[in-house]
Amino acid sequence: MRKFSVILLVFVLMVMAGACGKTEKSQNQQPVSESSVPEEDTEGRKAGNQDTPEDFVLIKGGSFQMGSPDTEDWRSEDETVHPVTVSDFYMGAYEVSQKEYQEMIKNNPSNFKGDDLPVENLTWYEAVAYCNARSEKEGLEKAYTVDGRNVTWNRSADGYRLPTEAEWEYACRAGTETPFNTETSISPEESNYFGHYPYLIEENYFSQEKLDTEPGEYRETTVAADSFSPNAWGLYNMHGNVGEWCWDYYGVYPDEEQTDPAGAETGTRRIYRGGGWNDFAKHIRSAYRASSPADRSNAAVGLRLVRNAVLLEGRIVDTEQKASGKGDGSTLIVFFSWGGNTKGIAQEIQSQTGADLFEIELVHPYSEDYNTVLDEAQRDQNEQARPEIKIHVENMDQYDTIILGYPNWWASIPMPIALMW
Image 1 (cartoon, rainbow, N blue to C red):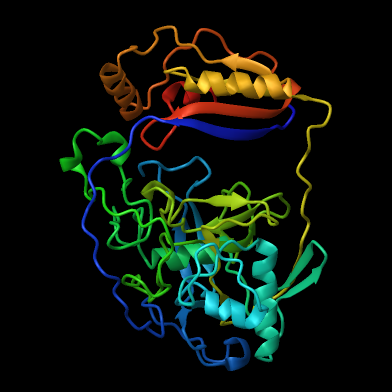
Image 2 (image 1 turned 90 degrees about the vertical axis):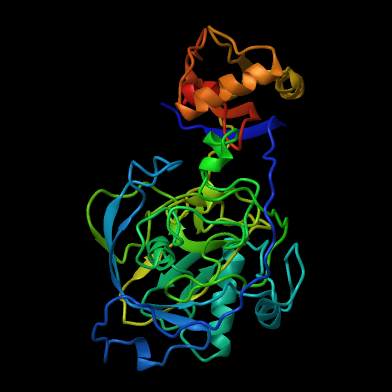
């Protein structure tokens, strides 16, 4: 089957969460010097035998279950649990601030300006360039060799670098196995995210007394890098505020146990972790994986630095694949519409692009009454139902690009859309 790209167009915001919680001021605390995992002898194995860098935490290596169990609510299929072991490493207690970035690079790409705010709106390549510039200034061996769009990682270098996806999740979890390092839920008083949509709000819109965390403040901006309390290992804002670029290409997790993995060998997108100020709680979970082309920036994506604490070996040569273009295939617009708005927009896109158009129609349509459809749609989402549709797309492999259009129901897709995929 031909591979195709999928473009999501969320046309209509059907339901907004109502209640908002009170705001509390950020809690500023000093980072601890070492993680609280069991002691182990690292004498003589430190990279260059350096002391813990300022504002960094020594994360002592260990083994953990990377990914999320099948029982975790709102997990994605790409979060398959697998055993991973990581070596000791140093990780910045804070996300890189705009002051730190501007002093080194002499510009500030951030959308939200403030010296103590995390730098954001920078590409993966710009994050790599910052790592190298800071290493060079401090007399360290640069981790990356950059030749245009080709980047090679010298794993033995003692300079600054991006964390691997495995290192990031290991450090974020800080020994926990729950959706967040604050255990099962996380409040807007503990993290900067879209506070109107706390964890599990999707199935509890009409019974919020069942929520561990009620809807709270949505700040609509980043906050200072030292905001809130750190996790158990002294790391701030691992959940929310800005997503953090990792080294890895996005790819399928392997089934076998791995030691110091560095992600897929090839790819078209780079991983970033942690979620941002505009993400729903389900998208700032410890196991949640986000990715983007390396040359794209986002006002909700920044970086956090890492350095080797033990000597690693080898080089990883960048082998970026080019994303396929339109090619010889064509484009299909697939949409589900309840009130007609989505249908109208889909038809306008079709008229301007000449794409094929396919409307998802139910064998048993939802009610035309607004209050009734709320109950029906909520029921289907709670049950993860797949309502029967009249017809399916034939010959899907003839299309290179699929444009999906649908109303946003409780911060997620309507179940008729889920049925299609």
